Length: 294
Ligand SMILES: [Fe+2]
Image 1 (cartoon, rainbow, N blue to C red):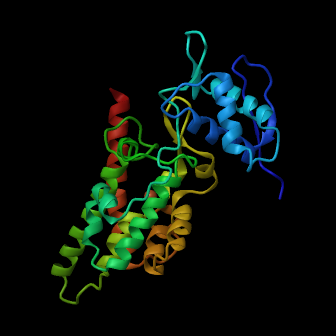
Image 2 (image 1 turned 90 degrees about the vertical axis):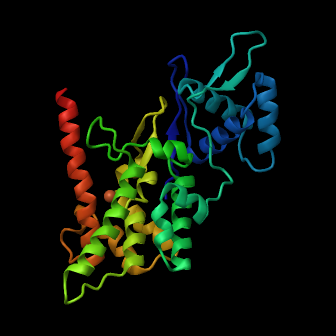
Image 3 (image 1 turned 120 degrees about the vertical axis):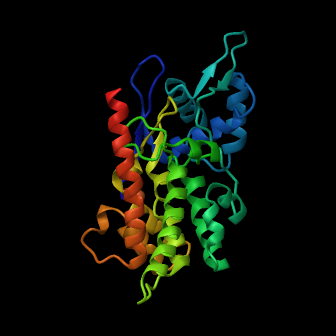
């Protein structure tokens, strides 16, 4: 397979260099971590890069380092101080590897999504948390999301300027699903067979692909990233959840919850989630239209 390349930028608008994406990512990570919480002169920065990459980088560290440093300056992820000697520093809007080495378990993920604790099967609960852990730490184009960033993401990028958030939507859907299950079970004498653990897990995982779908641009605005253009979240969500041993009944909900599932027969749990999801989504569209008229 052809090696993926990236055309670097130059702060003065000069032509960039077409270099290996893998080498670019390695240098970018090394530069941002060298400048984490400190300012370094050019010499200090390059001595740090040589130290951290000497044994693991094939290529001229100084040449690649300079190319990627200029690119990060052009993207306003790093900047130079005005005082002499000039030093490099990470810009406040730079997107650093925020979640490197972080692992969120059930307790932390339940802070975002309290309904996680309503899943009775401990093993399923833990698997749902581990899927979310990976989505949060690997999302945003590989940079990871902080909880605060995740909480600030709008419910949908399609509905315009409204106050509904992504995390609140997931919590709303999970609670709607539980409420619908309560009503259905009490309403029909025939008994509606609802697998609650699968329903709640599906509700919490249906959009787990979105943190992978979304990225941030240089100004910090949440946008659909390259991966998101290639795969919508029902697909990336299934792939991620399958990797963590999530059962087929729950994968089915993730796969079929949105329009992708219109051509298949949804399970009872997927029908419930699908409608809960669109209650929020259709309301968001109405609110978006109203906000646009103001
Ligand atoms: Fe969705």
